[in-house]
Length: 188
Image 1 (cartoon, rainbow, N blue to C red):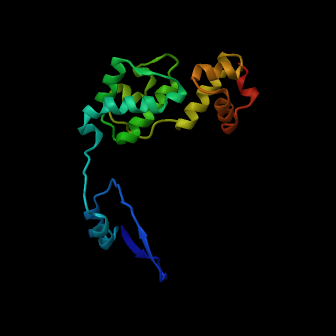
Image 2 (cartoon, one colour):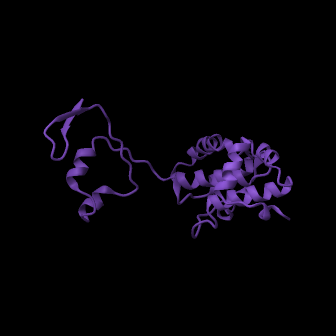
Image 3 (cartoon, rainbow, N blue to C red):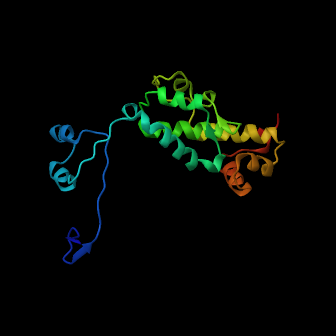
């Protein structure tokens, strides 16, 4: 147990905790540039774990992709085709794990079949090269458009669309409300 005084306080408080902090910056350089406090660095720097970028840990792509597929199962249970997995393993992932997470989520939302193909990924991932800039359209925009397209396909029947997405109809209804999807948008 550790103890401390609140700023301006007179009563000692005890805590039982561990602090875990992460950064994508070199803190030694930040200290030299007066962008990070040296005293804070020495207080929190007990154990340092350096993790190389995803492009240097390609063996981690498959288990991470599987984890993100499971995490996004509310949009539908999908699996990666062998060709799609190879596309993921070829790509350099300048946005690291977060970019992989969003690429998988986007593919799960856009994929109409049970198996994700390379076509379900952004063009730069399909080509196996780093993106020149941010992907077009936010994940919310992609999801919104996919909901509209699916609702049009099922004639506006929310229960049928929810079944296709493998989600509860109430969840779909909340998404429709949050995205401001109107009945007029569902007319072909």
